[in-house]
Image (tube, rainbow, N blue to C red):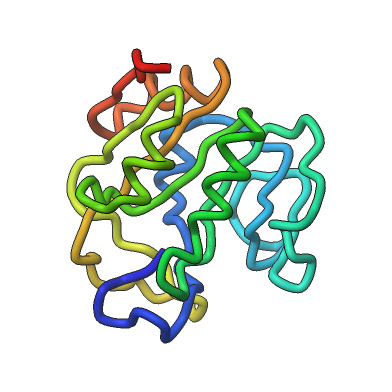
Length: 161
């Protein structure tokens, strides 16, 4: 997850474990994983060297926190996630950005967590709160139910779909 004070420095910002605790589900695949020993509850992972964007995700229930290292580098990941249509994805809640209106709002459901999520750095330290919030995107009934039940924040079922 990209923080405003380090755009371009690193795209390694890990989702904090409390998000997975609140979701209460296990994923088949994390296509953007830092490695198999990471705390994301996923049975299978693709790391940076595997290039998860080019891999076949099959019918997997996916957790996706895409790399955010370059300007809009996350958009192809979001497009693939939405066309895959089975899982939960995370992105910046940049509601004024063109990519948000072109891509993110196509999710079946959106959950806007309360406050600003503090992500974990590769060394295990907790980063400062980013300049903006995040949104969790749901695709498929399992994902939508998990987001709705999580009590992480404001859940919106997308009625425009």
